[in-house]
Each structure stands twice: as structure tokens, then as C-alpha cells.
Amino acid sequence: MLRLILSGCNGRMGRAVEHLCAAQPDLEIVAGFDLLGAGDRDFPVFSSPSEFQGQADAVIDFSSPAALPALLDFCVQRNIPAVLATTGYSEEQLASIEQAAQLIPIFRSANMSLGVNVLLALVRQATAALGTGYDIEIVERHHNKKVDAPSGTALMLADAAADALPYQPDYVCDRHSVRKARDKEEIGICSVRGGGIVGDHDVIFAGENEVITLSHSAMSRDVFASGATEAARFLSATGVPGLYSMQDLVAKRIL
Image (tube, rainbow, N blue to C red; front, side, top):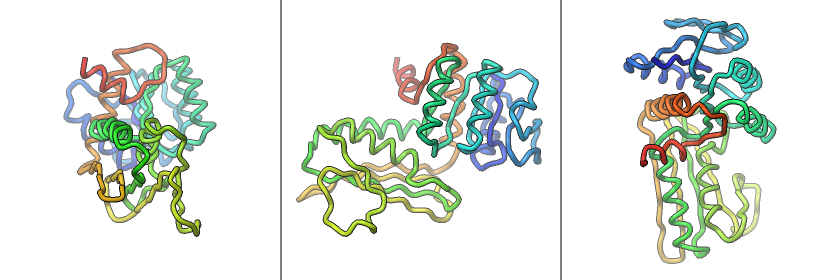
């Protein structure tokens, strides 16, 4: 039995993970962390990680960047692996995650979907094959409650393309404020927020005579919940401090 703590348990993704765990006999949520405190849950909920005194094998975090400092302190002090599925971290917070990963296993990904991580590989391959003759634009669409833009996944896709380019492109997210023609050495990122869109991402390669689009659509939040629980299983089996990503999980599944 894998004992899990669910950080951000009162949010949409927290409830999706709870629902998934209820159908998995080898997973048990022993506690939840949420600034709003207890709700209609089948497990105890704490507003601060330090209040929890029980035992757990891993933490799954779908909360917000504001919760990171207390969560990392708790995980390091209790030697509990952490799956960080939250987006919108600052550079300072990313540095603190890397520091904590020297002491405990940490799995961080801006997108827990296996399909998205296959898309990342395809974007690298397409960029390398098409070269510099195509303009790259990324369009991401999410629900109207998502607060960060561009999405972490859109930035991952831009980074994947940048890895295959012979130059470091500029990421342009606010084109309306730039009154000039598009520069060749840039990647445009457009964010859409509306309704209940779970998560759609298009990577557009626009050439002079053709347009190639690579797309991924998440039909349910269950795809992210499933990836997060798989990441928790991965960390539990690994047990070695370090910063892991979905690429590590995918590689293990292939082998």
C-alpha cells in the first residue's frame, strides 16, 4: 500500500486524484494539505503541513506556488518524496526545488500527461527536421480559473523546440504591445482562458507554402491525476534523492 498526502486537496486536481485513488487498491490518501482547511473529505485535512504527524510514502502537490516553501520544508524534514505538479514557480522557487532534490527524491513536471511528453519529443524532432525556415507559434487553451499564463506546458513545448534550434529564440507572449513584423528568431505563445477547457496545446510550424500543426487535447483531468500517481509510484521505487521528470518515468516504462 502506497500512503499518499495530497497537497491542494480541495482543488479540482486534488479531487481528481482522490477519485482515482479510491479506485486503486494499492493507493491510500492518509492526509490532505489545503489552506482552506477541512472539507467533505474521507481523510484529515491540515491547513499547514507541519500539523501532520502521521506516516506517508509520498506527497502529490496540485496546489499553488505559494504553498511550496512550507511543503518543501515538511518533505525534507520528514524525508518524504514529493511529486510537484504545480505550475507558475519563480526562478527562486525552482532553485529551492533543486536544492531540496539533493536531499530527497522530487518529481517535477508542468504536465503529468504521458501524451504531452510524447508531444514534446515530436516537437524536438519536427524542429530539427524543418530547420529555421518555419515560424513556430504555440497556442494553449485552459479553463477560466487558471491563473498563470502562459501555461507551464506551453513553456515546456517552447523549450523543446528551442533545444533543436541553432540559436536561443525569444519567447513572445504579448504581441499586441509590439508594433513590428515578426522576428525570425522568436517563438510566439498565445494563451486562451475560457469555460471548462481542461487543456489544449497546438504547436504550429508555419512555412512559406505549408503549415504543420502538432496538437494535444486533454479530455479529462484524470490524465493528469493518473500521471501524478504513477510518478509517486516511481519515486517510491527509486528512493534516491534527485530531481526527476516525466522523461525518467517514460524511459523506465520503455525499458
